[in-house]
Image 1 (tube, one colour):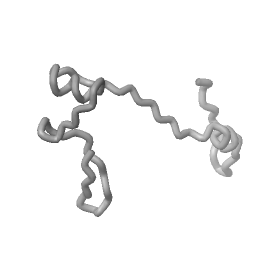
Image 2 (cartoon, rainbow, N blue to C red):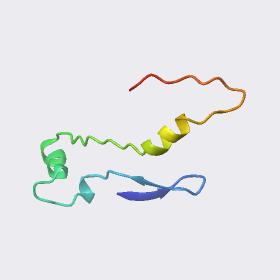
Image 3 (cartoon, rainbow, N blue to C red):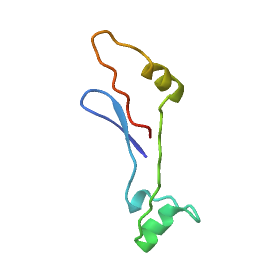
Image 4 (cartoon, one colour):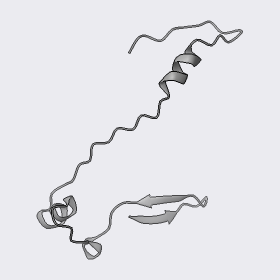
Length: 73
C-alpha cells in the first residue's frame, strides 16, 4: 500500500505495486497473482446507513412539501 497526496493536499492510498515490491507470504493471494498470473477478487459490502435514524427522519414533516412514501424494500 502506498500513501499519496492529491493536488488538494488530501491523503489517499494506492493498493498495488510491482513484482519487485512483492513480499512472499505463503498462502496469500499475492503469491497466486504474481506467480500464476491469476486475479484476486475481494467481495466488499459497506453499508453505513443508520437505520434507526433513517426511520425517524422518514416521519418528519416538512412544511410546504407533500409527503411521498418510498416503496418498501
